[in-house]
Length: 302
Image 1 (cartoon, rainbow, N blue to C red):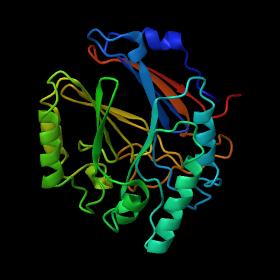
Image 2 (image 1 turned 90 degrees about the vertical axis):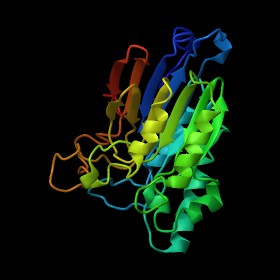
Image 3 (image 1 turned 135 degrees about the vertical axis):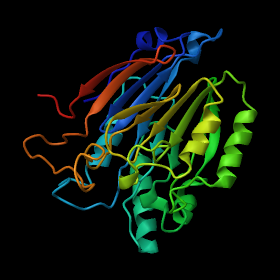
């Protein structure tokens, strides 16, 4: 089930500002070619994985809760061309009120993902990791909950909308975001990682960020912004002005479409179709035209 990516695929996106997204077992792979006099050697891609919920138990939703994450690690390691980096967009572990158990789960998760071939792996918390202790345990294992980094001409911003149990970024982080973007070239390519959606997808199910509109207002000042998030355990694409938002599937169980049923609950495991809802997808996008080509793949091919 490996996703094979060759150099020729990279080259055809060079110079157009395109983004390609593919997710395997809930992981998204992105390649970017940046316009403006950059050489082919500046092409790259990264892998996004989300919502592993290590420590979850519930055979009705996933009878193999300890197997899915190792399978995703193996799938990433099998990629013909290894990504430049890998990012986990939150809910690394499943909620527990026991601080010792929380740290045990974080430690087990860290050990499993240490098997990844890629050395550059980045993390951010989800509410299951951090809302009960303001991400104190998360920081002991993985460091800051919000930060920036630059890679081959792209400015990456990791936002934390989970450590505050009110699902807020907070004034301090919003000011930090504004200050950071003020230092960037107005035409810079900006990619934002966040756990919850920054827009009101379905607030009744906690699928929103209380002050996400303020963050979006700041981001809208830049013409080249893309947001990748997790939390909703399904594929979703949304536009806020010129900003494209893409949700990644989960590595533990899918959730129903927003508002499609009275309560938010995991989609039951289908023994006749194992891993249904946990497939991988390839999305090819030319953001200047906001054109997306999406291909969905099952986890296990017949």
